[in-house]
Length: 116
Image (cartoon, rainbow, N blue to C red; front, side, top):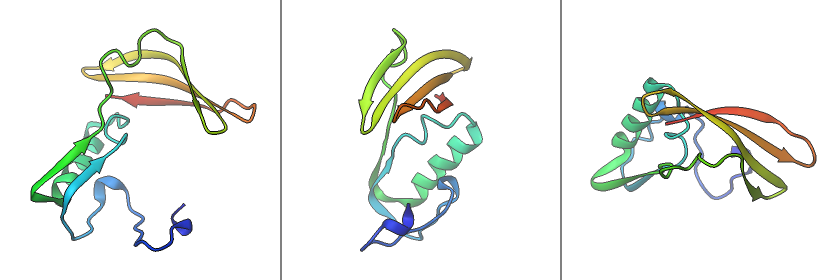
């Protein structure tokens, strides 16, 4: 995907190891934190945010809303198909295993993801 970017600097690195040697007013951590089941990975993601946020800056972190994975199955349309949340099970304190199906062009690739 990086080879398609034009007019911007690109960096290929695991997010939890990223070091741009720069600080920003705002750091955005999208779905990575809520989808990382390993506590060491989550800690690394937060360290990366701290390393890159200015002293007076802020970090915006995506969080799953309360009850997000209740009343299953749920479906939502995406470009070229849909996402179906099929089931969810507790894995530990604050962590759930979520079974998600991505239906694209008639096929059903499956993926299990861990949300915290």
